[in-house]
Image (cartoon, rainbow, N blue to C red; front, top):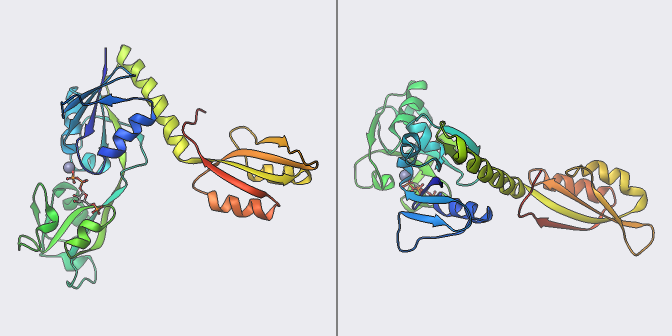
Length: 284
Ligand code: PRP
Ligand code: ZN
């Protein structure tokens, strides 16, 4: 019995998806086959597919689970379950115009031909804002549509912005934000559900680890209470004596999100020699 996972073959999510499995302790080799691989340390079979097809394969049960962008799910909703947001593959679906085109607001899009691979999302975005434009669905290389005269504007995924930039386009509206999510077929049960739980446990540990940092610092003994109140930790901070009397080392875990705020408060409270380390796995 093996769990089957569908990953994007190439594109924005491909590297992050493979890296997530590696961080979960799951290795695999392609063995010459570009479309599937067997994991070596987990009962997992991996399919490498076009991202747009992944929700279908999962809904049909060809794969049990998959990693796909929220943008793909929004364009083409399927009877699948979203189990976890994965925190990588962040991007946005945006409308962009040739650099030189004037743009004062949404109404300027009226009557334009907009090329996109996301006609459904774009159509509802525009109609919710009473903009009537001509949507041209194309399946790839959307960014070149204006320069070849196929469209006046595009609606495409942007992450670094370099694709738009190198095609002389500038972003004018954000239609949606997206990141990678883990999806599953709702009907998974029995032995497969047990495997899925095991994998999910590892994935959640990896995500928690990537959102937190391990912090160590030195402080005078009389500051321990004040500093501990800034550093809740997983239970409470670890406090160990230093060789120099009257001083301790305090260890804890802090969220990456408010990292700099916490470091500022720690310095104000008298912390010295602050070290911050990344965490590989975090089991709560
Ligand atoms: C997206 C999008 C752009 C590019 C933008 O493709 O279609 O071509 O990435 O990224 P940038 O802002 O960093 O230049 P993706 O790799 O997601 O594949 P797909 O859209 O063809 O599935
Ligand atoms: Zn795609």
